[in-house]
Image 1 (cartoon, rainbow, N blue to C red):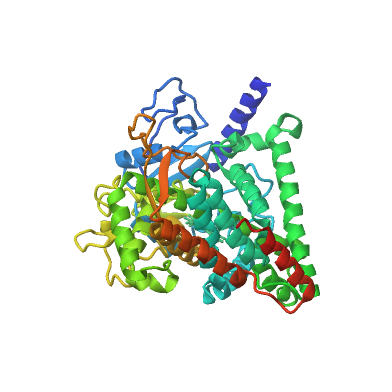
Image 2: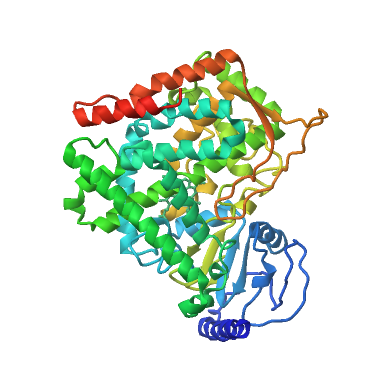
Length: 548
Ligand code: HEM
């Protein structure tokens, strides 16, 4: 069995390599990069050469976990634009925001496709997951529809849901800080569940399917995402295929159930505003099938949970390690907001809060290895040849550690956004720093579609945490501070700090009571009584079950 798999990989790798090998156009050169064929079986950053092995390239040079650190190390050696061959595919890694913008935004016509995700059936062609679609007609129509409903939602500040959901979020966090992962996912899950389907009740399923999809697309989870040739093995010897077909089928049932749920509410006249309701109302115009429509909204639901909650977790870590920034932030929050929670309209007066948010995204990027683009045409950049079919990775870990832009990059330092002596500073401070279009949201035509929602959620949730709680190091039974790991992060595509111990307390009992009162005030605003009798009964029941 092992021999069969190895032989298949080598033969298919050879065929692909020979097929893809290209001659250089005159006057161009290959980008620099790690060359030679060597098999490395080490997870440490210093590689050990063990055995020469042609065809598969340097794949074993790449650790399964935190590979972006290895890629950064190579960019330190070969420069901010280097290439490498893996299993017959040409890869380019970028470690400079300028080069990433030059290629992925200014030349977006050539570099906006996506590589296939091998663990999925047909990620580029099936009208399912927008972020994974190729640069094709399906992607264009889906992106247009999502742009429309996200834009409409942004016009209402997303119905103020990120703010109104903070009441429950902060109350729960103050009561059970050790459950922070669950509480943070529940917060972002409830917001996106309401936005997508008009009701908060589906957040548990959204969370579950988000984790499932994240695993399916992460190289660290499935070897199939690293060795494409494995996909050609028959199902009988591919456990990955069984796992994926089950995940996919269950997720599809969920998306279709959500479609039916909102369609039924629309029929009864009880559907609240939601992305699903909006696309259903426009179905006559767009001509989308029920299935595609369900996927478009379902995918946005999944995109909105783990990304945002990851940065909330990083906030706890940063405040544990850099308490001086918590003090500065609390000073600003108290000065501007006094006895109430920060609201989005406070944003122009709160540069420190925006700088803290910005620095969280820079210091611990949520997708440190980024989501790669694929080139659909040959290109030449600075004399270097980029053949069609190249996978381009704007390595966010490296870009956010570019010392010419972010001096002393390992230090969490929001001052780099607040003081003119830093290269990343931008005025006026009423508008900047602003997370929109920041490198960690990607580039060009594939740039993230959730930036407006994320900006809103971060402002109120992080501002709210600073307003009501103080975070610090935990002490053991002998009174000694418990060590806090600076970078012990998960290994999937969306990265978050692994669970660690910290102390979180209300800033005062008065603030704790204010948070509980705020939650009570939010409930009727979140679920206002409606004309329809049946829905009124449901709402009364929902409020009755809330854990006061
Ligand atoms: C802090 C949170 C988030 C980060 C850091 C983030 C980051 C990213 C990145 C790096 C990309 C790929 C861009 C590229 O290929 O150049 C992306 C794409 C995308 N994001 Fe986000 N994202 C976040 C939150 C969200 C949220 C909340 C939503 C929606 C509710 C969302 C929806 C999308 C969609 C639909 C795409 C695919 C765009 C396309 O392929 O055309 N994201 N995001």
